Length: 79
Image (cartoon, rainbow, N blue to C red; front, side):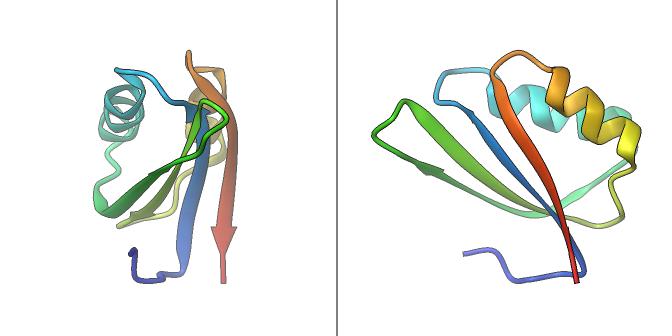
């Protein structure tokens, strides 16, 4: 249950150890704080992260997330 904010990021990823840490590290290295996050699993071997950052995630950071191991898709959501 992530409260909606103006800018959110949805990440579909392989459901395996280390992916959440990779996402947190990439966002942290970019100076982006995670205000809220929820993770859900599916029976397809994938998981979904919905992240409410405290600031806009720049396109270069979104591209770095997309290139990270275990990441299947990254979608920036804004109101």
